[in-house]
Structures are given as structure tokens and as C-alpha cells.
Amino acid sequence: MKFTKMHGAGNDFVVIEGKDSHRNWSELAIKMCDRHFGVGADGLLLIYPSKVADFRMRIFNADGSESTVCGNGLRCLVKYYVDSNKIKRDSEIKIKTSDGLRTARIRRRRNKITDIDVNMGEAKIGLNSKQVKMINHNLAIDVKSVMNRVIKVNNQELQVSLVSVGNQHAVCFMDNSVDKFPLADFGPKVENHRLFPEETNFEIANIINRKSVRARIWERGVGETLACGSGACAITIAGNLLGYIDNKVDVILPGGVLQVKWDIGSDIYLRGPAETVFNGEW
Image (tube, rainbow, N blue to C red; front, side, top):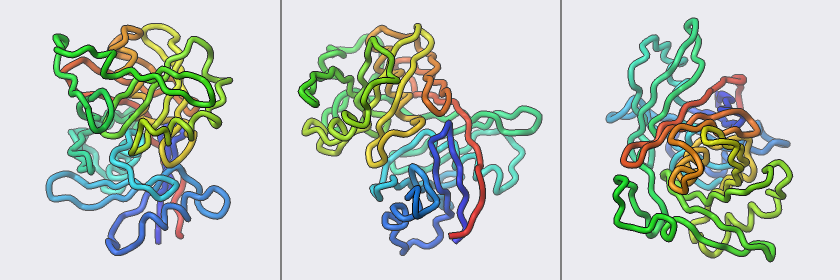
């Protein structure tokens, strides 16, 4: 089986063309993503032909669970698709995901892909079972009461903002640097907290100024990753609704910088890099 190793700001993936529909992809993801006995990755990306889009994607986390959407994974598959088909046009590319259609555009410099813009769809706040779509500025709801929760983890109270970008996120803003926060101790317990029956991604974020945020990410089914596209979107949405940041923000992550733009009532736009690391055979 041929595969391609890729990453988006350090969030790395094994990419496979999903021709064999009968294969146990969950089991394969666990084996291939293992960093000691496999290829090593945060997730397994599958690319399929599609009748309604340029291609269809599926993503399996390192623990074998299937995810709905992934911003960094989307960008990696777009680059893979463009490179494989030797596409020169820079027009809109459509991707079918389990959470609906997404669109993307590549950005080039000297004929080399430098960044990829992805439309991540609409934002919602609250838990998966009680999400509220962000329609306009004149919301007939108390945003903070829907979005904010206090949870107790390791005998410590954390205030988290609940946002969905096709998958659930819990964002915790803090005054101190995120570098020294014991994410490995808190991440698994927030991920599996009883408030989240379907588990959650967990972000810790420190506001630098109104246009930049420094953050770290604990991804559901993976653990701490160097970057997370949907997590960067969730941080931007929560920070904007709470009045901390503007509508266009640089989210600085251990693996690099992702740019997010979001206005209430519009879709979320994510920009960042995508790189091919190597090709191999499993």
C-alpha cells in the first residue's frame, strides 16, 4: 500500500487513496500512526473520488476513532489532490466531508503552493446536543450563558467556552503563559469529562493582543498536537464573542501560525501551510 506523509503546521498525517472500501481503516490507523512501530502520525487521511465535489475525505484519529472534520487535514488533502492531478488552476476546490461540503483555494508564490485557504463552514456554540447557530449580531440569546461552562478537573475549576466547528471544542483562556500549563494532566480529563458525552477537543489560549493568540491543543483521540485547524477556529470564535480579540487573528501554535477570519453570520475561514514530507510503502 502506497502512502504519503504530510503535515500542516506540524499536525501530521498519513494520506492514502481509499480505494479498498472493505479495509478496517480504524485498525490500520492505529498501526500506521504509531510513532514507534508504524509510520507515525496524528491521524490517517483517506481521499476518495466524489460525484458532488472534487474529492471526498475521511479522517481517523491515532486511536482509531473517526473524526468529522479537520482543518489541517483538509489543507493537506487539497495539496495532495492538486499535486497528484498536476492542477495549475487556482480556482475553488470542493471537498465532501461527513459534516458537509467545504471549499478551498490554493495560494502560490513562484508557482509553489505556500498556503491554502479553507472555508470551515458555520460556527455554533454550546454542546453538540444543544448548539446555537451564530446568525447575526442581534442574537436573542445570552451568548456567555450558552457558551461558557465551569468544570472541575484535578480539584481545580476551569472556565471553558464551548464551540463547534463540525466537532466539539472547549476553549480555556488564561492570563498566564500556556507553555508551562500541565496539558498532559488536564487534557485527558477534560476530553472525557462527563459534560461531553461524545468527548471534546481542549484548547488553552493566552491573548497576546487583539490580533494574536498563543495556544496549545489537546485533540480528542490523539493527545497534544503541534497544531489544530478547527481548534484555532474555535479559539477565534470564542475570543471574538467574549470581546478579547478582533475578527481576524493569528493563532500561534507550537508547530506554526494559523490565520483565522470570522464575522458573526458568515463562515469561518482558515489559512495555513501544507507540506509533503515523504512518500512510502506500507
